[in-house]
Image (cartoon, rainbow, N blue to C red; front, top):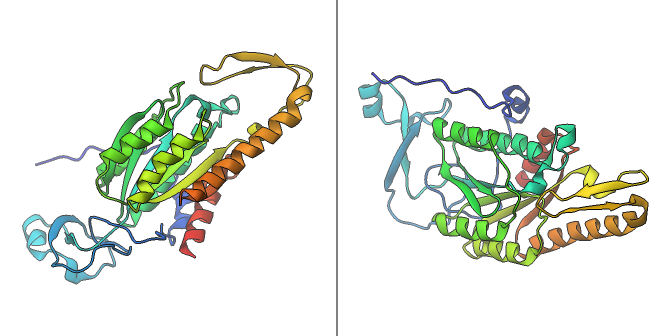
Length: 302
């Protein structure tokens, strides 16, 4: 007899808080390709229903979908899944470069905010019987867990999010190109990044690969409020988080220039996201992750 070992719940998974979003669903804006039965529009046209897999029965589903032979044999309720039906295949791509550690002195860095947000996304997506995957991007594609829906798979993703470690270097473009080559089925890509790279053009060229294959791409631009303006004071030492060196300066001397350049950077990320056919959303770490997620789901539900 097999024994199921209990897995500790991720500290970033607050089920009580997430119960407020129980009535909400992650809705796609375009037709997608999926693997199994779900609530999303399929790009596939016609063809006979071909058996693909099983998944556990969810209370309230149509009993006609139950596989009664499996129930009689195992005592567990499963439904049959077919290839010509579709569900959501969503890959959460997380920027784990050094700049995502900004804000850590207050114990709530950009990376920490993403850990809460991505864990909540994985819960919402898997709860609606869709499939969720994880890609970790830093100096390339550091980790990949293709989309799946089994409980153990989702728990594994949440554990990987919990133990994320950053690397100083950033190569989002290469990581995204590698990810594109590793994922065969089109779906939804949710990229969570601060987009602080030397050159944005290669990053969005990589995202265009997904769009050309009819992926739905969502860019969540993560911003810490302390990045938007320099602190008050006479003199500070500024130190880069990605081996950028350090510089001593008076904030008053460079404040206006810095704020203008940061605002221009944010505007450029938005413009390039929309030009590449991606959805764009600016995400501030000052806004509770649950509020961000709820607003995102409401907006997509239309």
